[in-house]
Length: 66
Image 1 (cartoon, one colour):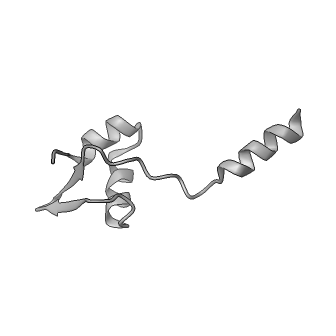
Image 2: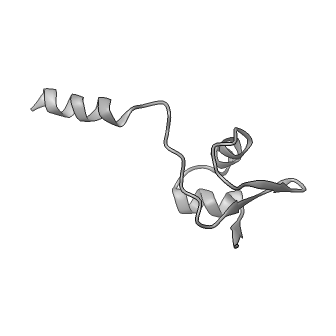
């Protein structure tokens, strides 16, 4: 299995490196582990969903506006 760093994941997912590190420390990315001070993230790992908003809420807002 191949792994990527937090900075590589940040570029791939279009989020900050710090955000990736937080997601790793919270256990929200499957298969991650630490190598010294660096996170090893599986290359096929999916970007976790943002729990701050719900997709359903955004869809309902769009329907109400139309």
